[in-house]
Image 1 (cartoon, helix red, strand yellow):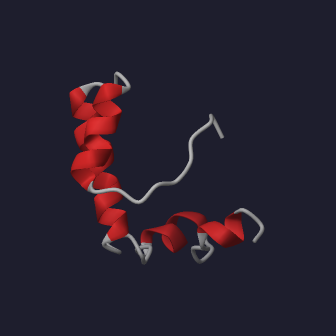
Image 2 (spheres, rainbow, N blue to C red):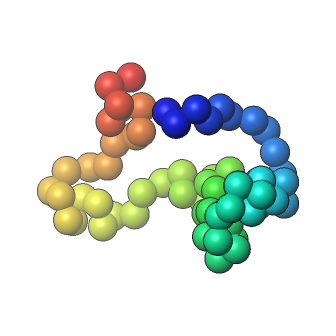
Length: 67
């Protein structure tokens, strides 16, 4: 787990932390946007492409990790 822990933060604070740790600015922007989209639930449902590509319905992260 690379020594990281979860902390509630704003997108701006998250981006600033990434930049302080030496992340490239465009990666900080990409990570911040992706994680904010997830927080807002935009990725809550998988599109039909998962079933089309794999022949199986999508599963949750919890199911994938055995939870």
